[in-house]
Image (cartoon, rainbow, N blue to C red; front, side, top):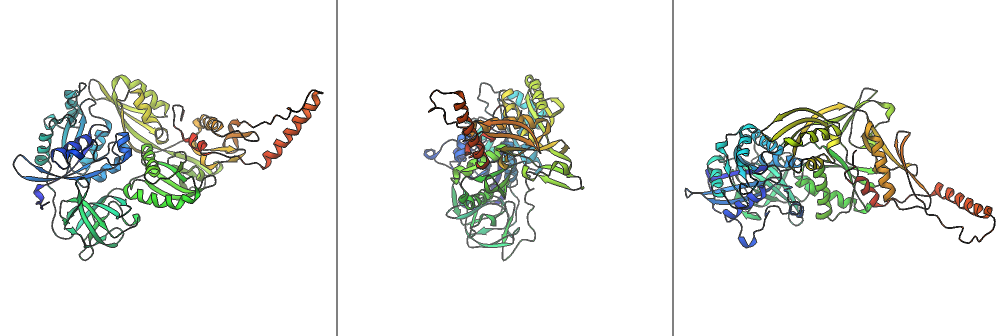
Length: 605
């Protein structure tokens, strides 16, 4: 491709609530610019992961370079980044927006403005991006364009005259939208002096090593340059630079305003950090770029390999995954029951589900996950405060002065007729509805404050159920609040199993203990002796179930005679069971660990 000046480059993202048509619109851009041939085209072309295709969601950002001939006859380079829509991938969206000058805000004509629409718009406004509001899916019978335009003005404070009406699926209004990108999104600003390039994403290629996604702000980088990563002070040589069309295509150089990739001689995933600044080693920039605000994990869980000898392989695979997903953190830990593994932090339960599924599929790992937890603040009687995200690190009850649990402030957007059911759900999750706001004639927005622990498991699923799919939620951290948190231990044959331990609210501990014991009773096969499954808080037993024992028919050879003969044989068997119980170990199958973590309708009652 011949080089274009900065005035003919447009860097932009597509942002929206989940399932509002971002990937379909990106597909339509690729077709209209003839970036891909129709014989190789398929839906969700930029979603290259099996998980994205199966679930119909975008999990990670996908950059692509397109060349567009405008109506004025000029040629423009479009650098598009398709972004996820789910709240758990908010950090992915914020990193993508940092590489852009504008954003297309997509609104589903049949659903209107949703909670994540507002959240993503706020992210874009914080970056001072130009916004193009677009009403999508106008061809649907259920489309209500006047309502969407009203919501655009009332909720988002954007004049309705600025909105474009399109249908990405039916190919309506796409040409007008592409012209709006040329007219409304400003070109990048940059100088052709000392190199400054922002690392906004990266991935690990088994054959080529670390592939770094960069947005060049100033200067030029080309193959055989010696570059420096300013955060780690690491020098390396560039083997290749290029862009995504949507597949990797090598170029002679990347200049100011360009978005593309750099392949260096670095082979370790730990050598590259997202948010780092790339500069030339011989002529380094005076200062690094601001980078990104560090993501804060919301949900914690342990990840362990089923086979102990897979630990090193798991360690390397986690490092490769962190390269592509910096919001996922992992630190080594050991469990008595599960052996060596990692304590991992995630942005939410969907994020946790996607990470473990990617480890299983992409890297062929067999894993066990422990019960999800959040980070508590525990204040001890000696005046110190400790942060606890692992139940095993919970101090003894007699040492605790009080504890605090993390809270979140959530905004729930829903049709008005479901407001009563939503308020009941909030109360059931120990939350408090602070106020309600009428959005329009048919929609209401509820603002509630709830414990994070109560919403990470199944709140979103239940919200979708009671609102028939029309409710949406966005949340943000809202400090801590005192609460009677206790460590719940599960004893198997009198021995605590740390993989089943969890931190629970005192009011919910008994129900939770009964639930775990019942699931274990069903999952653990019968043993040679009766096995007690107990839930305990400290030294107090609060729940119990028994795994039944095998019983050999010792009376089979006892023909007739006095009843005392049968009693004698049964007593002899009973004594043998007692001796076996003293020395016996219980075999807990993998299915038992999975059963405890299973999330169904009765979970967290």
